[in-house]
Image 1 (cartoon, rainbow, N blue to C red):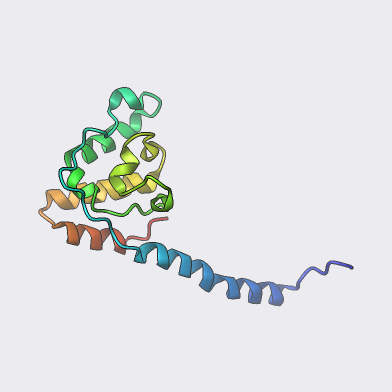
Image 2: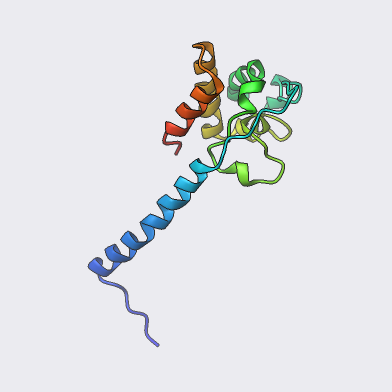
Length: 136
């Protein structure tokens, strides 16, 4: 059996057929619901500067999240980690292993959420703004 390389037209048709599936995945990610903030949630598990010595540039973002744990706990993470067992919300990205120290999407969502919270936006307004961004 001989492999035949598809010509340009066939290749483009194959790619066009794959795109709806890829964009559908992205849409499903954004359609999953935001979590309900847990009662009494606080920032006691958000990593501090001592825990982030290997990534000192991330410290200011972790500090922002420490100011708004009730908001961060009500936002679904946009990088895809929401599907990982044990990850509940954006707040989870700033706790335990602190995956947000390396993830620019987690950091961007936190910065946006903090800025909007400071502007007096509600959790639902913040969620809508987060959902409207093309996090890539």
